[in-house]
Length: 375
Ligand SMILES: *Cc1c(COP(=O)(O)O)cnc(C)c1O
Image 1: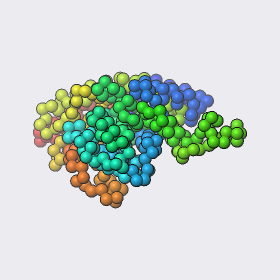
Image 2: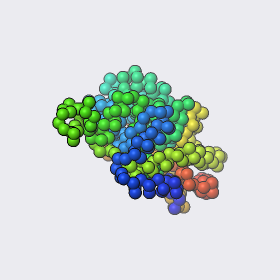
Image 3: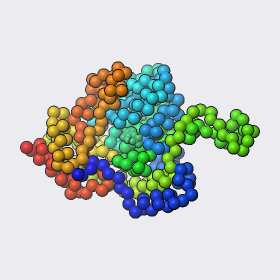
Image 4: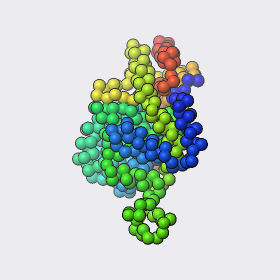
């Protein structure tokens, strides 16, 4: 079986993990701060706080933004459910706005029509690695008095209009799950352009503990004293995994380049298959492609999926519209609310895309797609 995604772990990664696991720290040690500093090298210098997953990053970012009951978080339904679920868990109402037909990213016009005076965060999703029109979304968020959050689980390494992911929104969340562009097995990070939001995210990651005497309410309690000013969680990413993260970051430029080559090879090989729509490639973005989201006529998508799976090709569908999940349906969300995203879902099939995929693998997948439509 050819997987649809696979991590790239080499000897340098193994050596980094081995050094960390046999060192003095397993949980929080020097590799954490090093990884966070290394991440800032990719975000335009904006600081990062490492957490245990992309989901934890979203939860932390929403908590830092003060999301809670009575508020609305506006986002795209064409995403992994965690983008919306973490806001719902904090008590906010999630408002789904439709996506741009060409890119699958949150449509600024749809977002502008859906914001209200209760909107506190507008969350954009870098679908497949490509950011939405962040300048237009910034204007929408500013007019609503809301913060702009970018779920960049797919897109570390992407540069949009000359600016790297991490510098485009007030809060940016990353995922280092095994299938993502860069992995720490499980892991994630929150990046912020705002020192106040960043401080709140860093505090939430570690129970909200205040250890600095100058900031404590009762500093004379004793040298052991620490206190909690705002509740948080333990979302600390261990030293061992941060060591893997730094090692992977040193390879990220190569990952991005290989992903771009594979993506372009699919484009070229599928260009003359009339039934296949290849991904849009706006010329103002250098994209770190996480997915290769092809679109085919909805009535044959399932048959093509089964044809490829039967031939040992690990394809996927990204994504079941978030508001279709029963947990949202039970809250009153209905199919048909976001017709563009829903049609995208019906037509979408993600072809394998990972660093270790060979040109021959790509050609074989394309031959199978071609054969399916020729039959
Ligand atoms: C993977 C992903 C997440 C969640 O990240 P985890 O690290 O798996 O928790 C959130 N949003 C999007 C768009 C994702 O692809």
